[in-house]
Length: 469
Figure 1: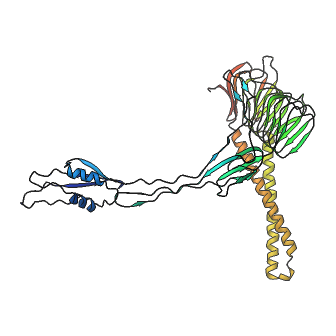
Figure 2: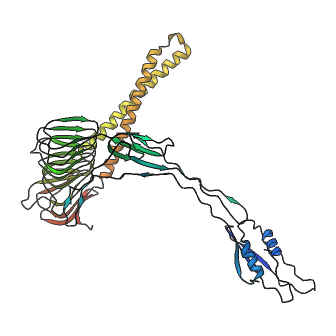
Figure 3: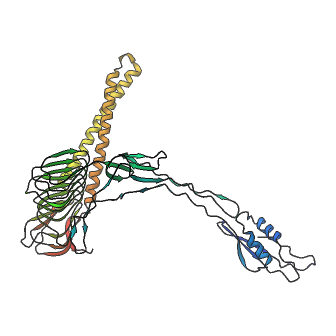
């Protein structure tokens, strides 16, 4: 606030008063000029600026507005005459991709309730030289200030990690990525890969083994054929009693009638329009339009979509749950549905724990031997066995790597068993007598046909109730 003179030169009380109000955050200053007496001189620009300076206002002054207040004699009105500048933090670095990064080969449900397995976008293919991604580096931000002259420093944006992987090249500035080969583009958590795709037109009647990449088959796969791929497998036609194994996903646009022979196995998800008399194992989810007399095991969920979808006969396990329109049928066909952690899962976890203890024991033995050899080296160097020391060090390194791998697997199994405790069976339409639901050691058998139910384990009992979408 300015300091007014109490009396003018004539000895009269001076009503002139300049007030400067600064906001709590120092980002603005407001000027208030009390109306002077008629016999008093109006305010001057200089005395107003002096009052602002005395109050500590140094930056962001609106000189034109101050002149206007003085010249137009704007009194008894609060006017903002100084404004700070807000700091602008820098933007984080980011990537723009020229392809769909969250592509999941899952069927969609049409408006009429049927499931569309034909128009799934399975993957994106690129050609050598295609632009894949553009990186935009972080910005430093813009400095700000308050009306008292304090400089406000921005927070710089954070950079993103460089993309790693294979099958691409990078521009000299490190910001633009291009495909180095023709193939399928994959991306997950900064891992960018272009993998080979083996395209096979028509039916397959010969074995295809150990493919380092994806396999895309337009036709059918007949009985007796074996297909193994490090990548995903896409089949446009029907599958008979074949052995099909993938380190990623398996997508069957039509369906499978395996006649009880052959096997379909994936470390990712498996989807098909139907499974009949098939043996299926997936470490992810299994999606289908219907399942008939098949043995299905999914460490994720088993999802049977569509208004007419059903699980009829067979033995179906979804560790993380089962969702289906119908379970069993009006003829009361035996149909087993299982959810939650299986005995095998629990045994696998127990075996990993035992294996870890054994590895720890071996590592402890190696460390003890190294300690003894080190003592010999320090006390009696001529008796030191450097060859044995090196071999034991190498053995310890190998066991330590094995331990890390086992610890990772034990965590995966532990998390899977823990989360499987939340698993439920959802039947959107009907569950018929003859269907059995197994949740660990408990079993539920409906005596009558039930509609729109959810089955789960609560404490030590199986609970059945209606559920809302």
